[in-house]
Image (tube, rainbow, N blue to C red; front, side):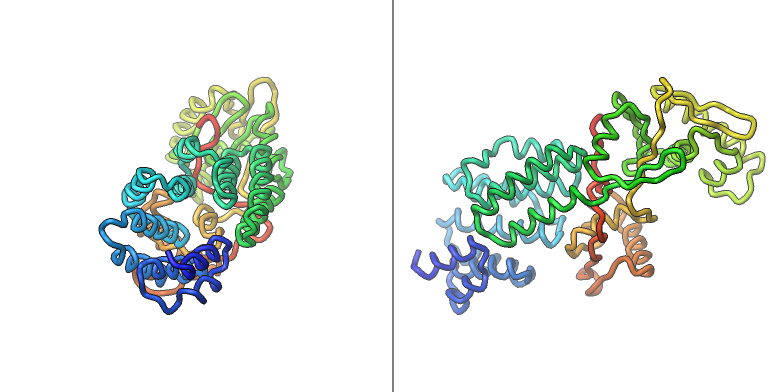
Length: 406
């Protein structure tokens, strides 16, 4: 490897893409193409970066398997950052195996971190933890150690473990300062700011309060009965019942939770659960059926009792009932949560991440765009969507991931 290639690689390692391009911008040999591709990725030109990396992979000879594998890993990172979630993960697995077989443990570790970041994005927290389990950040460069701790913090935040997340971010900041990469330090600072931002709202006895992530953690560990409108579940410190796939039951549970300790009129429940303007006898019969199902689902937590005008939630042990609501209510809140990372998303990637149909996702995005909450560029398959981050709000609780005990 000549001195210009070495100097360009060193500049990229320090987060200086312009410095790297000054050295290799006019060269078309395979190593220079690969470095130019990585530099363009750091500058945000992902299409050009992908094209350069693929050209570099073809230019490397048959005996340069490690170099080709590094190009694949770099392309996988570009796909992740640009939210091309349909990029083939088998190619990344094969590249990682090649790197491990040839003793390139640092780039092999980088490939594992890409896999963990993708799993975290999909809400596959257990899988992300298993991926991290085989990696020791103490034996890796400071930049990779920072990424390790950021993933640990991300998992902790998605599990609503604020103390563990804060400790991981402290370690991430130390590693980022050792790495000396300003962009990496900025990412750590952005993640740390989420811990102090409003993460949810609590509604109890008709009064609302804004909660940070650590306050949500304290609430979930307390003796209160929580109707969780962020994850569509009902839980206390011992049990959790998911109602994510039973929207009528959750709507009824939330209505009873918000009214507690008072009851809710039957006509009001019919309107909320079935969106009916008038509660006739058929709707009242449907309500009785759904209330029966709700009683069965909430049996670990208490009773749903009939009153003269409607129904009331009666928790066991006379504990308080708290509704945990999203900080910003919207019909498409989960879509907004994904867009709030500031990256450009395709509708197919959003549909894949949120496990929904692509046409449904397109309708949701068009509705958000009509309300001025999302914007797009490009046309057809090249169309991408984004939005400014929700000002002053953490989106951790809005992302698709199970609560502890689910």
